[in-house]
Image (tube, rainbow, N blue to C red; front, top):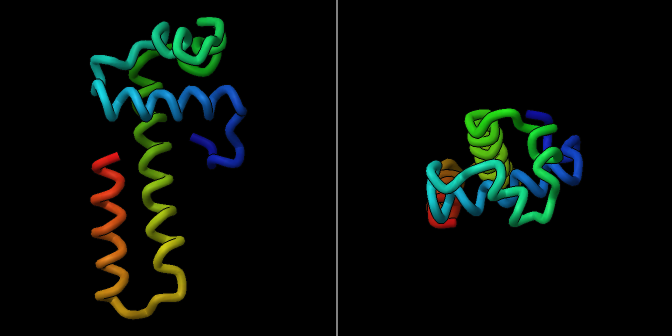
Length: 99
């Protein structure tokens, strides 16, 4: 998956919505046609980016995980104390898991 800055606007909207659905309903709630309906996109737009739910699940998980890791990097930038970095990692892991 390309870095966030390289995503098209449509693909990012798809991933953001997919991330919400995965968090609320799990894998069983993630269907390409449902995302198209929620985002008011033509199903062909979803199918242009994703030909299968498996690809969408993979990219959504990678998108979410990349944001999570970046938050740890950003929040611990310049901090040399391992305990402080670990506390940031734990806090961000908790927040990512809850959201």
